[in-house]
Amino acid sequence: MILSWFDTREIDALADRMAKDLVRRVPPSSVDDQDRKAAANREKRRDSIRRQVRDFTSKHRLNLYKKARLANRFKWALHDAGYSKALVDEMTLELATVMATTQSRSG
Image (tube, rainbow, N blue to C red; front, side):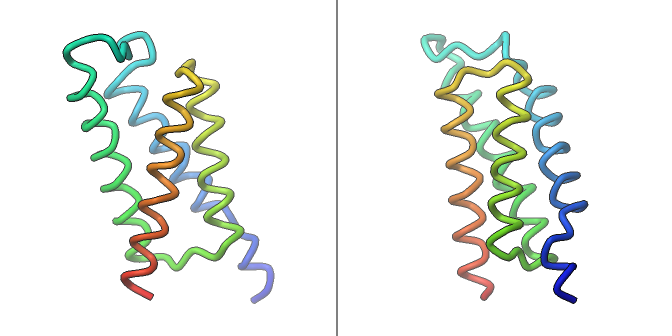
């Protein structure tokens, strides 16, 4: 049972899926905060993150280690994909916020 606390296979798969989905929807080369489409793109990114995290956390209770693992893996996947540091930090914060609010409502 204690080993399940550290089992992150599902977490890793979720982080990878979310990052790939984000890259597919809003490629790093298309991100330009000066552009008129920036607000719409930000909302698309946020909606995708919110939906996926809420779906996952409604079925899985995440402990502190798994929350940290998900945020960290997601952050580095976005960084490796070529997004700016500001965007990576913004999306990681969004992920952490959604995890915290979703779990606090259900717990």
